[in-house]
Amino acid sequence: MKLSALKILLDELKQVEFILPDGSEIPKHFHVTEIGKIEKNFVDCGGTIRKESVINFQLWSADDYNHRLSGEKLKSIIELSERVLSLENLEIEVEYEMDTIGKYNLDFINGKFILKNTNTDCLAKGYCILPNEESTSIETVINQTRSSCKSGSGCC
Image (cartoon, rainbow, N blue to C red):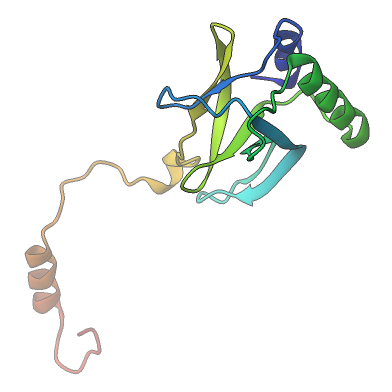
């Protein structure tokens, strides 16, 4: 979900709620502790230089059990972040800590924001995945090496 879509949805919400991928709710007293832009510059395993940017929201559950975040309040925090950080209309990534800090994509269903698992994938599949060939057993390799090595050649 892009930032602009989230802002439109917030206009209709009295209370913001998030659902984890397993269907459980993030406690209703959560806070949005950070909104920012994360830029990632990297080289994939195929040698291609890549750049990715996302808008990042960090959610946190505190001990103030009466706290609730309205759509209007979250939108005002977003608009402040847009002004101060010159945020672009990018995809949103949500961070939430359970056993470890998880990163999630965002969806919206039936008036609630749904956190969707993210996955790792190879970005250079054509470069680093070997074509399907007959597999060679270790015994075959050993026998080929033995038959091609001569004493004193330094190959074995």
